[in-house]
Image (cartoon, rainbow, N blue to C red):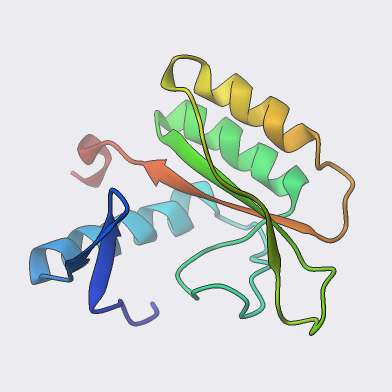
Length: 135
């Protein structure tokens, strides 16, 4: 796994990456890679942190289905376009779109579907993983 940063963002505020926070983040990232992103190609070619997985809109719809089955909350979505110069960079199209918790999965599906078929779009997200899945 990639090296964790010295500061971690929590609620939009940078906090020192204490051993406890790093341990929780490692568990969180390991869970996402093993159960949520499993088998899906990461489209992050270096334009974002190596800790952030970017997916096609079609693959992200699979992620939403998995999240619903696992009771993982999709908290926010970011949409990037890779159709920029230089090619290794991406530009944020929609930034940190918050998802209403009461109808989050369907809302997220509808939001992502508007990008289906776009070859130059990647999607990443933040997730709320219940502590119970780590046990």
